[in-house]
Amino acid sequence: MSFLGEHASRIYQSDLSPSMLALNAETNAATVAGLLRASTLALPLRDDSFDMLISIRLNHHLSTIADREKHLRELFRVARKHVIMSYFSSRSLKAISRRLRAKVSSKREKNSMPPNRVAAIAAECGYRVARQVPLSRLASGHMMTLCTAV
Image (tube, rainbow, N blue to C red):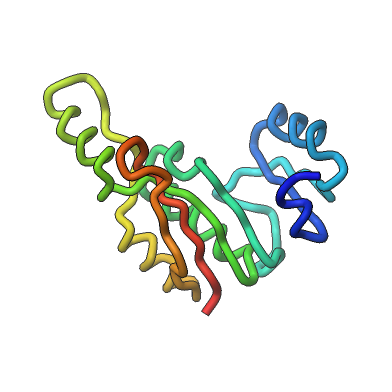
């Protein structure tokens, strides 16, 4: 049984990629109650559909700040109590070094968000950032973030 399966009565996965959905169905068949092919920017679900939503290592793949913010708003809309998510922090050492390198090389900046903007969006949606920890202080700019409904 998967880690999540040990702690949840039902698990649903949403992904735009059919191959990711198939992989999850194959590896977690005993714990997954349903699979949904959908974009994270427009989840075809009612408000407050799930107690908890988890979105890890997706936000930084969204190319515009508007889409990254929309992604967060969708998570908060569909979750009832908790959101666990990651994003690439614009304040991280990795992001700062990428910005500096981008000025002198072809290496582009990472798609990032400032932590205070993440907190502001959470607050607008009725959530608070309960805990936020870097995946790694030096090697990664990703922040693992737990938000809870207020």
